[in-house]
Image (cartoon, rainbow, N blue to C red; front, side, top):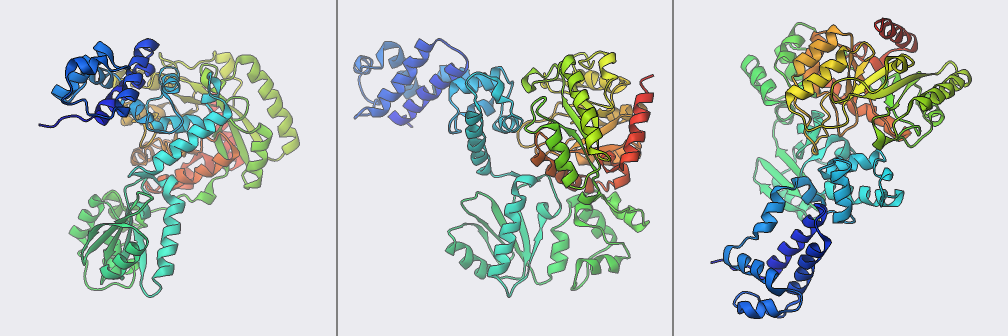
Length: 557
């Protein structure tokens, strides 16, 4: 029979004390268990086998704690701890493992900010949300941010945006080390998937060569045979290599979804050796399909009918739509953001600070809006022909209404409607809020439609088709929020958006000028659905966007 040792018992009491702290329990009770944990860990003898009365007499333990020790020795569990674990979100427990975040701070993060995962907390730090709460200064927020980044970087799955530079560096180092062999990037990274489980290559290098190289660099071998070699190092990212004698055939097979390959192979069986992927397509009489588009089977039939248009490119973005300044929770002034946009060769900037309900983000009150609009007018005079548009990211309230009166909403060129609060909704509630907001004539753009944070928070459940249909009926644009942690609306629904002629807006949701670069990740996601620049609002030229604003204002009546 398994008997718990002192360390396991102490760990249970330590975790119990921390959870009780997070739940705001009596500090005397909490301290009782933390003292017990400290005492038990330092004991020179094991508790198992000691007489009950002797355990109770140990300073720092006592009768009550002694009973809970006996419970653990007899059952292997601590019932009170299990109760707290059952009533605490897993992500909150996970935060206890992040350096620099103690139970008291976690309690504020959970109870007041309504954050339940490390990923959500990192996103909140990047938006300066913690600064409004007692005990969270700028230095504390920066330390938490760095601690979470370190913690997240050691997880198995990675966001495309987080791993991109690392992937390119590894690719360069491998090719430098193996000059006589070919290495071609494949898999999820080549397909521009938003979440990467492993980095993959097709290679002419032998299994033995790779084994020697990675063992020398202290990598662990996960799998090794003549077909596949997999390694993992201190970065905790899996590298997988497919050994090939027909490298472009295998590259093709490792650079598409199962759905795409099943359809392709049923129509166009692969034959012989190939000198390029283009040769595979030419052999089948199908125009070349980029790897990012090799997802759904219908893309093959579109290509056969020459219906593949030129997909949007990062250089097709002409503006920054959806950005936050120092007026709410941004880092930079409007003027700084405008100059940064001009330096990037952009034609206009849409400032969409948070609205008044977003108190956690210093949302704008009515009098602040007037002052901000006066500043925008002055800047537009000095920055001409560059233009700044007046916008707001208006919170969608619990009843679906926006959080300003129509008179106030009417002062904006563009209104982005987004859900930021009470995210734990059932589909019926979420749909009511979203549909009501979409039907509001002042809504121009539906922001981050599901509220998801990739690898951190599932979005609230929605009927995507009904949302898209409603946007089509009410002339509302759907945002593809380009922040690599959001990428919301999911690119898998862009096909239906385009079918319904719903305009997409690739927006960085930038809280600093550095955030402008995130637009690129939205473009990479949009490419997977074949979006063109003509179907993207943030690719409109200035004159086109001015016309868009006119149409939006006209629908207000």
